[in-house]
Length: 149
Image 1 (cartoon, rainbow, N blue to C red):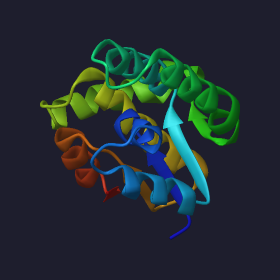
Image 2: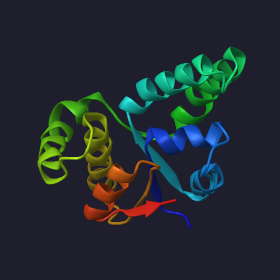
Image 3: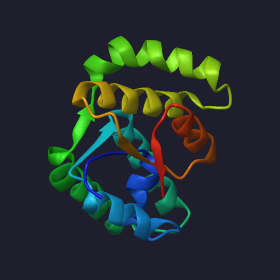
């Protein structure tokens, strides 16, 4: 496949935690030339892992291992749409997206705006958008992304 891929939190977590769609997310991550995500992914991932520990889906040690892999292995190699982007164009675009797609939650609008910023910044007209949330998938398709899995 190759090219750029944007991963929201739902698919990034699936790389580490066996869930429906995990294989497709892992394959997409492995096959992409470059992977990007938003800075909000890190907060969301910690929250998801904490909920999985609380609901006995993961043990504390497993969640700690996943956090370590994210922070030490994956994040250094990813293109992060970070704080400078959030303070400028991402906020404006998120606002527009919330009007165009009123079913989006706030962080989903930030994810989609981050993917749009990544598409502009990377000069890549085609970026695969990995997401498991139906509302965000619909909005991403509406913004011209190839939505997977």
